[in-house]
Length: 538
Image 1 (cartoon, rainbow, N blue to C red):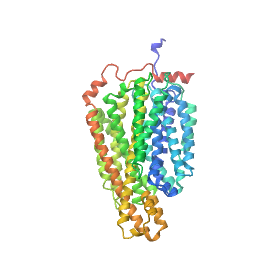
Image 2: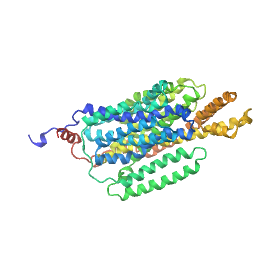
Image 3: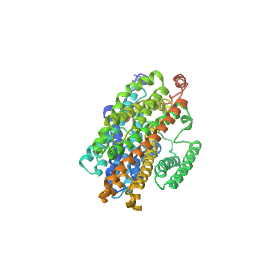
Image 4: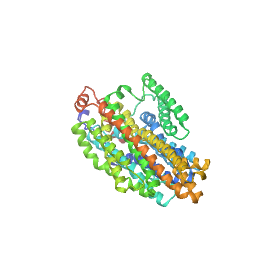
């Protein structure tokens, strides 16, 4: 039999076990990130922390993931994806333990960022391994679709699981429940996943990796800290640093022999415009859930479990919309599918603007359902656009950008809306306190504590029973105002994203012409599944 007569496998040996464990590893990352916001009220009460620090607890893990995803993805391509994946899961376990037993709010923030950095080693590597182990075609498409849908579900389910845990245990336990899954994943990866499949032998641009990591971190922190009371100076300084660092990163990528990010690919309209649209949409999802969780627990008095269950309609929306999103994408193209998603997204935020102290659950459910439907449309279209517009030999860049859409978008928008929430809360409660009949009893220190966060205000109320009712009512009204401000800013961002997609993404006809261009997305060599077959045999 000649070599040409040998059938090329399209999937690796033990494909089911490999795909299952790669999805499990992605789920571990999403569960870790989702647990933070649900535990915030309990954390705030335990440490008596201001809202600005609570925002950093929530954004810490997404920040660590977003800032490292490009660099760690390149390290995996060069030095071994299986090895990076295994190390990342072990470090997630360490970071989770450090988070659970952090003695101060500052160390908790550091532990959350550390955990996010570990997730940056894991999450993009799972998609890169699927791409390397499954040959291009229906098998890979189905594997990626399953990976994406379950990982998306885990983002919502993580809040529910955390709520169940917190119904019986203190806040510390919210950071521990993913550890058994991580341990299982490590053992299966070592036993089942082949090593060194279709990896690069090019040098890694370490300087570019450091610049991108620091630049992304500076962007997120400038937003999160800049909107906090008294944080304008720090925010501006970090924003300037981000501009400088990312400018240097762009210059480095143009000059580097082996750049982390190929601008020849990134400047295509079918790459950058869907990426921008996806970034804003995922950010709206993260920001909406972040504000909604605090609104439900502090204003509507939901327990952590109830607030987690209340967000389940978002998961339902993701699932039920997926087949419809695929049909619209196939029939009408990327731009139309993304615009449909943005329409649902805007209606979701307009619904959230109606939330008040006496809001019935059905209106909460409608908001979350619509946001899930919206993200299903946008993410399906954006992910396909990124991978189809990128040559196969640069698909790691597409998977890294796909991760950045959700991770960086979530970090930036969650930081922005969290900062707006904090600023709105502080402004409103100050006005209410100074205009109340008991204003003379509110000292300067009390006012500072009241403006800090809802949890801090509740603590002040517990120390002053004669003022408790007034303080708690003022706190609820102030959080309603802060939530409204956050959702209003979010709606504005959604409008910006809508027009970016409308004018940036090509029409279906132009998209099809681009796909038929010579060499489009076709650079590759031997089947990656064939390489995996040989590795298994060895």
